[in-house]
Image 1 (cartoon, rainbow, N blue to C red):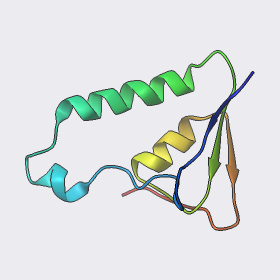
Image 2 (image 1 turned 30 degrees about the vertical axis):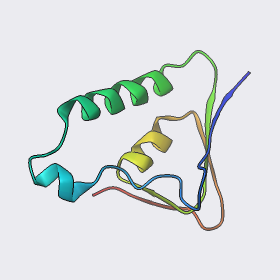
Image 3 (image 1 turned 90 degrees about the vertical axis):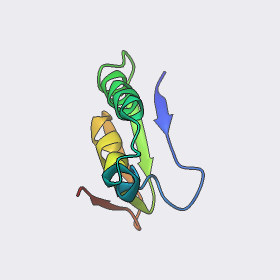
Amino acid sequence: SVVLLTSAGKHFGAGHDLAEMSSGRYDQDLFRRCSQLMERVATCEVPVVAAVQGCAFAAGCQLAASCDIVLAMRDARFATP
């Protein structure tokens, strides 16, 4: 058994909305839940594989980095702020 993380669209994930975060409207609970998700991915009992296409920026990049294996398609790009 494995867990496979993919995207439903052209990009794996762009992360949080930085404009929203800097405006003070950012929900700290969302950040906590995202951190818990990445911790669960990193400590999962079965291998977690990220199939990354397009952009994996910020939290999307962190999520991919939490996985045991990252399969990067030719168009994959990774970046953190």
